[in-house]
Amino acid sequence: MTFANAGTLGAVPGRRDELVAHLTRRGPRLADAGCLLYEVGVNDDEPDTVFVVELWTSAGAHRASLELPEVQQAIAEARPMLSGQFGGFRFEVVGSPLRATT
Amino acid sequence: MTFANAGTLGAVPGRRDELVAHLTRRGPRLADAGCLLYEVGVNDDEPDTVFVVELWTSAGAHRASLELPEVQQAIAEARPMLSGQFGGFRFEVVGSPLRATT
Image (cartoon, rainbow over all chains, first blue to last red; front, side):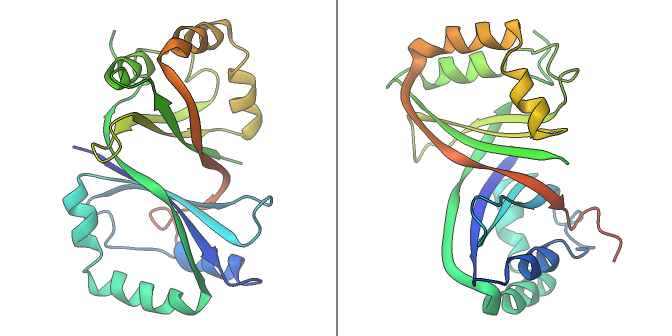
């Protein structure tokens, strides 16, 4: 079942755009790992936060991706840019009004 | 610029699945209105909440969609199923590691 992660990552003040650049760098193995969508963005009302929405083929695929060496390295590199504040939510996708047939 | 909305909608206890069914009914004009993605789901850790992630061609397209008669009607129909608790966040999409070329 498709799994969704919607998250907020607090950035160290002044380092938001650097964190965005880091998160949007090409992840050549993400698609193979089951990542269907990974959108990264900003909202100037919250200038020290980076926002992500992700879709994965399953919650297990998402969990397993966190163990990939490439992802572990990316997390380590991001750590100095992170304030330590995280938010958001996760869910199992049930459907979409764009795909519904009735 | 692509606009993202990630939201939580509190449901009246016992009416979550009815709200999910309502939100996943076919919305034939959504794509024309600029809706690129609209995923609806649940998380059994929060049994009275419905989760959505949406992507739109722009924040303006999202805002304008709320005025469509079809959407106004859907909102009115949903009202008795909603507890009044809402959460989430909105952002402008900057990029994706799945689309990046460098």
